[in-house]
Image (tube, rainbow, N blue to C red):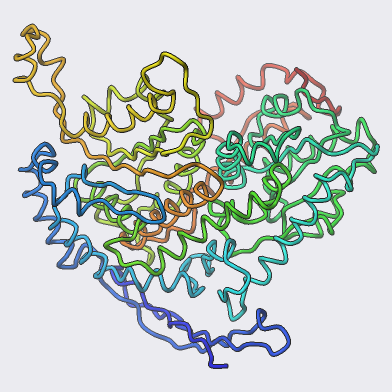
Length: 615
């Protein structure tokens, strides 16, 4: 067969620093005659010089800066009267509708943003990610969460190897194991079926799987598959989280999934040891192998812990924690709860958006449009925050997950080459399901700071209710607010309107809404597993687009390291003071004072005994 050639690395323009050499490599796929899906990639390396310009030095960037003056003279009340503009700002793909007509943007603005994308070499950067190039340059890694949901026959290479067969080896192993647990052929140490699962992990090992689990709990198909089963997530090292997760559980029917790539994450491993003690105390140490499994690549430490290495499920360095929900990190606990077929639908939804992102023109590309608009709002219009407002209780954990994906990815102050950025990058993300948020922080959104909003809704409810005699169904009541709030933000209410309504003069300033507050609406056909996968991938790729435009590395997270190092020093001090009565030393005055005060109170249980929390 003809070799499938992957594009060479295109260097990312827009980075100001002294020229540095970079490796460039080309990957040629050669099919194996015995195993076509396990072909090999041959690498050819070259050395090229890095660009020396930041994106803000380009003409499209400067053009957008000047364009702000035009936007400041226009109100959304007027823009929304332009039907042709509004029609052009509505995009539909596979039943998903994006309406960004309530953004503070003209059609000309969008053309300028597309030129900025061209100047940032966005297409080439997307290609580089999909080709497995080491775009995470500070850790020298590929970024291939797209491979986690790729079809079996897809070829996606990292370091000269097609990784898709490895992915499916793990998926097949998860399917087999979850089928055995769910059918009762795999039982606990006392012969009872394992119907309760506790997944231990933190950060991306927790927030992503929790979001998907929460979204699927009330989907009728998924709920039927989960009948009689429980899935809980233990993340916080706070013993209260342990106590809440243990409440009502029986060790005989509980399976624990420990998620830690290195099997050394401090919080996760302490919680894992706590759960091991809970199991061993009741069932004996030999029961650990039947009641605990791992998602890890460190088989040595897995076995040393007491877990059979055969029950360890792998993932790879090219999977970032916050992008790992489609790996064994999420697929294993979710398959144990809902069955692999439901989770496979979720993976197919994400893969559908992966293909859309890669192949669709930018003008109709959902993640690209969303990413460019975020850059416009944050860096040019000066709006640092974004509210994620799903009008679906099933998506209550979506905002916390995207908060991590976005803020850990793009919370950077230097370019990918380490040059301090002379412009703002990254968003402050928060959110709450509607209509709960309306009775919480919408006051500020309507009359305080300007915060661009993402309104997310679904045409079909997971749990429809219609009461006889009511004007509308419960879902229609919810969606009435979904449709009304964006217009309220865009149009506002003027003093003239209030005067016409005979509002007393002294209340007019308090009841005036300035409007001109940007938002966008994302309307999904439903919230089944497939649509949930689509939603996840849309936001993952949106965040990548932002980073590609800003010229930063969206796939490392050095900012989380310093606190961990300092916590290690504190941990040593606490141990020394608790066991030997040693004084607090080596800290500044404030920390020394607080630590001393903290140590004045006994912890409540002897340090040499095992005492588990109980509610």
